Length: 170
Image (cartoon, rainbow, N blue to C red; front, side, top):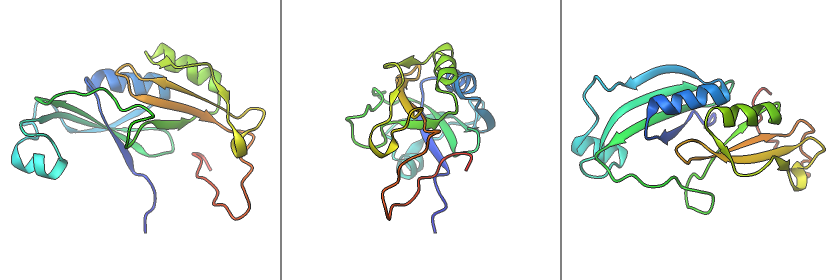
């Protein structure tokens, strides 16, 4: 039986910069480094096979962060591989990480102070998620990854026979 999402893996250009961003913007805490730059990098045929790395790529640093009462974030710093732009909403695959916040004003301020860039002002959630104080906003981390800040303190008008969504803190 699946219990839930344990972590999201994010490749970043600089783990220390990304850690600083997640700490300042969201209060993330470092759990531990799985692999430090002092250790031998993960590379070679086994790493390429096990992790889907392109030939010659090396993982230099892996760090696990804890984000409040939710899943963890695993940061990767990879070298000797062609770096690509972060996937945005129209791209296939994982496109963004959504973080529930209690106070959208405070959260957006911290997000921007930490180096993030909002794509717009917070806007009302649509449809069954709408409510007087239910809002969301998308922004980009300093390295371009898309993040969503979401808050629905007025609840969700669940359709009959639907499954209630998990919300941090419930």
